[in-house]
Image 1 (tube, rainbow, N blue to C red):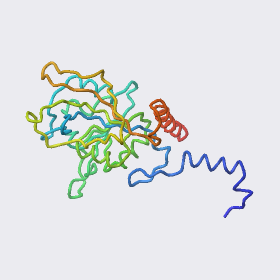
Image 2 (image 1 turned 90 degrees about the vertical axis):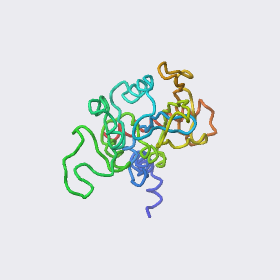
Image 3 (image 1 turned 45 degrees about the vertical axis):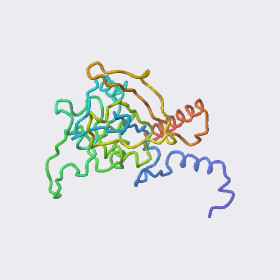
Image 4 (image 1 turned 135 degrees about the horizontal axis):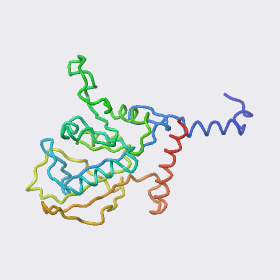
Length: 257
């Protein structure tokens, strides 16, 4: 036990505050990460049916919406080409070879089989390009991303990966293209987790309902933002709280360099 004169010393108190702010460990899933390594916002990007939250069937998308693809590219790339996209192995395999890795983004593949090993544990050559990160868990993916100067991280599928991140409680935002798909005309075997209004604030970020010219499908671009502590705050105060949260992460990253 330290003597009172030390505990009450202003210099000692300042050092304690500095350590608590930047180096006190925070639980991230099953792994303990210092806060200066958690600087990236985590967002999910998904297109799902309005009624049942269906997102795919047989490893393929149930629809083709050109404007949704444009939004996806613009959102995940960002203005500085400094974002990361996390996907499962099946999602990686579903992307045509000529389009992968997705350009101007750090691609991360989450798979139970680490690169260089097959199901028997024997060494094999990696099926992924050298500029693609391969992670065996959410914690592993976030740790590798934290080692790089990444702005935002986007999780882009598939169903199991979405659920894993949702269950982790670390998702900040969800960009949902809500498609008014007739459940009788579409078949789904993969679904997105149901969203609780008490956990997320929802806003229309696409200017209202849109209609795809070719298919006639109607859809909206929605953004769900995780409700922060102090949910009783008014909208302006909530925006300030979110900006503070982002600034804290950026400051922590700056101090880690």
